[in-house]
Image: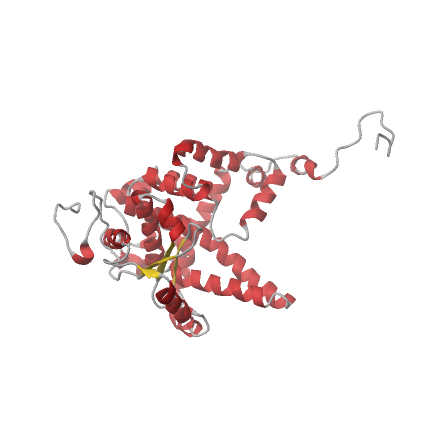
Length: 361
């Protein structure tokens, strides 16, 4: 039964418990500012669709579709019917007219993705299906439907293609550098798009604790009785604020090759959004509609993106981010602070009274 008290059939099948539906919701309602600014700019480019349709001839999309059709299980009323119901629910809640095909593929690693240029395809691994309970899985399906609604599948497919291409041309120094520069930029965008999709998953599941549990299980496995959501979120706080400048640099190096943010970071970001006024306004029915997307301003989106990054830097407790904030504020003795922050990279100075080169072997 839906939030209007009516029973629906077919595509309009609704969740087993009462959840709000968001007719004509624009993806701008839940997209992370950095994700949204990139998408708004791309959608405004004249000829953008034509370029990518031409590019699709170079990408192995048809091969991927045939691969999943031939070597995975397609979700339907007769196969993985509980996932089929979740998929219909998610499309109903986010008002996505065309339900994307969904496949379950044999892979012990918990994973899900939404790919495709012409039409999105959702793929979930057996490891993920076996790991999550119904409410946690509902958030994941909503996450992937959010990717489909935002058009992320196009860029994810291109990212997969370019990553594969970079490996093939690794022996060409300049060619590999050029491709990896694009891949690095795409990964930075895609990490933000994952935060957007997490929000879409929450709008579908409408159970923040289930979303938190799902992320925690992806990080630590199916040992829920051994884990605690609050303690898991404390890890994100420790990750953000702990260490010195050396750790800040290592964090950047660790995240660069990843297409997804770290799970503790995702959990903390989602909790922050769930407690925000923006989320509450959506739940109250106040959100941008798709009919208004054509009026979306590129410059406004970029300003929101810049403001979001600036706010993140200002609020962050990371030593490097605090240094950047101090630099912007004109703090003194920054050189000394940088030297102290990196002292651990150098050997400790000799103790007083020790001759140069002296000491025990």
